[in-house]
Structure formats: structure tokens, C-alpha cells
Length: 118
Image (cartoon, rainbow, N blue to C red; front, top):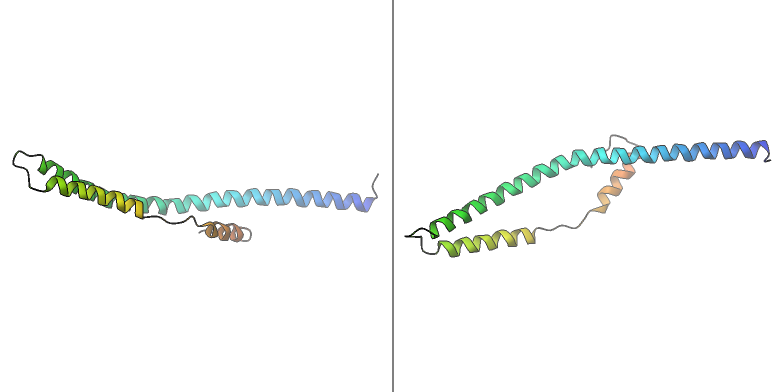
């Protein structure tokens, strides 16, 4: 049997580990909440980008329709194809690297501020 002081120390250490586990779980939940809020801004930005793309697709489709008329506009099919290429190349060229630092900062801040956001 361990001396009373050592048993008390082990009991305290177990309580600390349990508290740390609850804290870590709470930080993870707060991170999900912050991500959910941030995702709304992400959705809005994606919607705006897709609205721009929709305009370009609309122009491409209108040119295709005009090019397919019996008295079709000269060059319309070619212009439609070039706009399709422009849409594709624009989407391919829009790239960013993942940003792990933002997540690190959020998790560090959540340790002392449960209301922290990105």
C-alpha cells in the first residue's frame, strides 16, 4: 500500500488528467462552432463566385444558341468555345495553399477564450 501522501498525489493527478480531457473536448467543440460560423462566410463567397461563373456560362450558352441558328452569327461557336476555355482556365488558376496557422491560432486562443473565432 502506498503512503497516504503518494495516494493523495495520484488522486490529484487523476483529477487533473480528467479535467484536461474535459477541457480538450470542450476546445474541440468550440473549434467546431467557430468553423461552423466561418463556413457561412465561405458559403457566401462560393455563392458569389458561382454567380460570376453563371454569367459566363450564360454568355457561352447564348453564343452557342446564336451560332446554331440557320443564319447563325459568324464566329459565335468559336467565341463560345473560347469562353468555355476561359472559364476552365480561370477555375484552374484560382488556387491557394492550406492555412494551418489559422487553425493553430484558433486552437491556442480557445484555450483561454471559449468565444474565439477565426
